[in-house]
Amino acid sequence: MQLHRGFGAGAMADPVNRRIILARRPDGIPRPEHFELVETPPGEPGPGEILIRNRYLSVDPAQRGWANDAPNYSPPVALGEVMRAMAVGEVVASRHPDYRPGEYLTGMFGWQDYCLAAADRLWFRVDPAVAPISTALGVLGLNGLTAYFGLLEIGQPAQGETVVVSTGAGAVGSAVGQIARIQGCRTVAITGSAEKAAMCRTVYGYDAAIDYRAEGDLDAALAAGCPDGVDVYFDNVSGAISDVVLRHLALGARVVICGTASQASWDPHPLGPRPERHLLVKRARMQGLLIFDFADRFDEARRRLAAWLDAGKLVYREDVRDGIESAPAALTALYAGENTGKMVIRL
Ligand SMILES: NC(=O)c1ccc[n+]([C@@H]2O[C@H](COP(=O)([O-])OP(=O)(O)OC[C@H]3O[C@@H](n4cnc5c(N)ncnc54)[C@H](OP(=O)(O)O)[C@@H]3O)[C@@H](O)[C@H]2O)c1
Image (tube, rainbow, N blue to C red; front, side, top):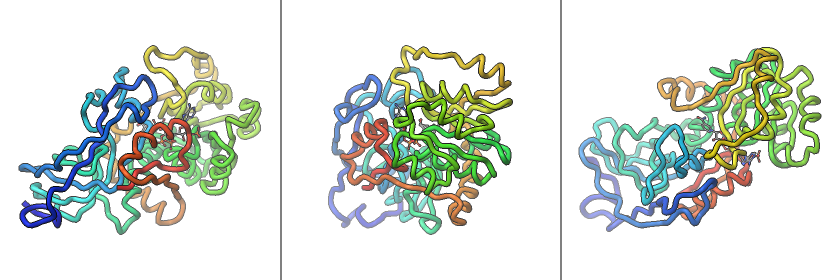
């Protein structure tokens, strides 16, 4: 077994693993009272295991689904278990032949200081020379990959087409807008504040940005922003915003269903206007996206995303909060639209 400073005989005594566990099942958006902070020893790696010291924890809208027990694509986190989360961390002890102390890895390490992981929890190695390690959770991680595959594989944008992105200033949305621009598309963001709309135009290079909270008439704003209709709608919110966008689909449009942030309840399913007439009349296609389906192509996508980052064609913003205790409130804040950029917790 390889040992790192802080572990093993003669090293710093008794490191503590602070873990945020799911203590109560939320009904909808998780809030701090649904979580508790507990302390345990970090443990020692068994054969084939790695001990990782987390450096950044991810805060993702998907955690709402993981904390709730409404039907979803994966089983819910059990009560009393550490909250499921992506994280990036440093290997501090390893009994796996492929991983050495000092390396940075990312994977489903959870909201905790340390993760004792088998190799199947790992997503990929992180090279600090390429970009700050926190980007492995955002633009070079789950968010960038979701934008990349959702837009290019499902949205299939062609040069000159119009791409509309809901939560256009968000971690996924900002990458979608920029990748669409790299493809030569006209890009239009929908977002929830004047500050974010300004960021969309000046930082992420959208051709137009609509603040849906300020805009009295979203329908008219979309008509002005998309005079030739919407060829690709990358949807992160569903609900009332999407009901308006669907009216503006162009012939042969593609609608990427990435997220449903505006849906207050998943069980029972919300009722609303029906999209079928829009899809029929415009011969449009609507398809759901689950990023994990593209796992065998992550390396290819990360190489392209990193090259765009390096060339300055792709930029990102982070909303960094400090300390593991701040994670639950950060998740609630995400659903209040308070984040500007990828929400991460620095440990
Ligand atoms: N399908 C997949 O595989 C996959 C993978 C990763 C992420 N996602 C989805 O992608 C979406 C974006 O994720 P992200 O990590 O990039 O988060 P994000 O966009 O950085 O943050 C979430 C944003 O959602 C918006 N929002 C929150 N509540 C809303 C409401 N009631 N109505 C309208 N908008 C609301 C807010 O933006 P505004 O202020 O602009 O409204 C908020 O900033 C999420 O829906 C997430 O679930 C899907």
